[in-house]
Length: 261
Image (cartoon, rainbow, N blue to C red; front, side, top):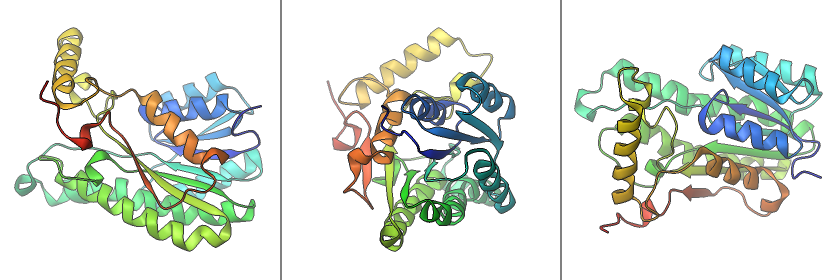
């Protein structure tokens, strides 16, 4: 018996990183998983690996309303219902606020903030029709504080906490719980841009990242995407049946204060 037996959950940004680990863990716990992403090759490969009848890949640009309509239709056609959503997809850009082009700021809003809004609006009626369920939004450590050079990103993550709280209040009577995960630094390609540089030395990059977070984070290391997935599972399962409208920080103690050891 798995924690998500009988559940059908859409996970966005699920072709790699945190979303991939969420999809893997949810499938392991008995869910049918709809993998939404724009990385078609990686997403299709993951769905194939998890198995037909267990996972379905759909091309989903979360900032496009028509993509959400198509994804919902595909999920219902494949699995008959939807009773869970993890709004995980997001993008991160590093830039000083006063030097951030308007186009870049709007792009981040469209994916991170509008994408979460469209996900809630598109999927909540299906969750209600299925008899209730859960929505988990991916916010960030930066939704609880500030951080230099990620102004646009932090703004969208603060907004996601607002969406989470309002959705939790409005959807509670429909049997839908809505919560947010707030990861700190997690070892994924998005949060470690150096890992995307083909000219970078992988060992040097890994050593530099490890040293940085040894200083910044009380637990002395960067987080693993599997650790975020475990929190998303908790918030999607009945283990969190009396929890809604809340942010949950998973950051190795970073928000508590910077370690000086």
